[in-house]
Length: 309
Image 1 (cartoon, rainbow, N blue to C red):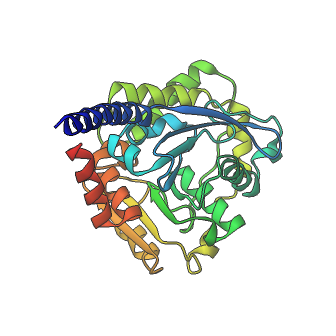
Image 2 (cartoon, rainbow, N blue to C red):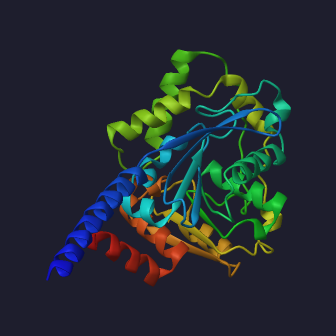
């Protein structure tokens, strides 16, 4: 009887210690860890990570004039934090990353592809699934163009066709260092990013990020490659494209018809959503993202296990 009591006592202590470890682990999953990673040309890149370090990697790439903060609803989602290692960065010229003076630093596709490669190598990421929003979809395609389909485990585009469809660009305005105008433009920009108003916090995050992009960077960005139509037929990457049916920049029927000519590409239409599905309908976006990466059954089982704890 004495031996049994001792064993039960030891078991109880072990359970308490295990539960404490689980509590600490769960708390740590939601913490953001920041890195400053040097690009090949020396530009410092502001990179953030969170989530499960042993899980599949999601690499989140924001849109034009935005920052890693765009993905607040993903970086702070408890299920995604359990299921994935989440990485987001501020692109060169954006947010907390460096803003090179020379126009060549933004030209073509190679600087952008190289930056993603530096992040992948520094953090030892094994074939991430890249999630690209708007302009971030073009950067995702830069990476695949330069390093090949085998460099990624999958591709998710949201509010973006990544240049796989020909663009119709009008004349581009020359930007000046008028900060009052920049603040006003930022507010108008954020109003266009969604079908309905987003929360004040998300509106502010987007506005501040927009203002952080200097006029000289905006002007230099005209040198960025945006045409990837040559890759549409040959793209051999499992791809999911989120389209909001209220996104005026991407007509749903036209976009879906062209993209799904490639059998590797699947589109998902979200009703009542504009250009920012991952903000406007974050719950649906996060669930479908997890199902796409893990498979529907695995994603459901993982979520059930998390809820059970």
